[in-house]
Image (cartoon, rainbow, N blue to C red; front, side):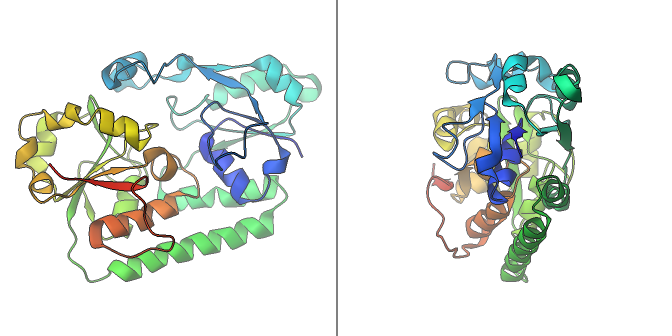
Length: 306
């Protein structure tokens, strides 16, 4: 089978299901497993220069609170045709995350022979993320492995819940964008709850919008998690002043008690792929000091002391 993934999370699933050897096309943002994707054709582009644009400029470019990002992404129809894919995996959940399902379907319709099959992933909650394994496993001819992986991942989540059961649950503000301040929704509140925290500012499955900074101040979180969408930790650290210079920052319980953490958002929190389980495990370490194997590294979770 020849597979094109137009979603980094889908590439994560393809890798987890042992099908990377069949991947013939990917996005410019696919980056895991590290070093394993170099020879695979990149069939998308983005008009966003993330290295040169500020968070505010990026937010305005994608449409601000209206979240209209689909025009940011280019899909190379020529490369897609050359890939001769049997299966294309995309999404229709967030136009800022990847090329939309509608655009992919339109591109596929003009290909010879009716084009490849298109699967769209629409997960909004933690169970729905893991639920993507069944249809992907069936489409990839790996149904048994998908079922086994689903069991493994749900077992790991259950283990996290058991480890934090009965402990005091700190209130947690997870920030998915720094300017404007955007709380993390969808599956992140469930990751926090699984790890023994009480999520603030967003509910499970919610497609969030920017909030006024005062909402964060009023919430008085015990813990602040910084996991900007698409930003590696070093980029988050470079823009930390966007929050630390705001009035009331130093008065937050999380800041006073040294419980501000910079996390690897793209790896474990922004993408609806199998690594969200490691994200919940990392949060159990962050919130309750749970020891993990392998241990949590600074690149996964770095504590910021003011």
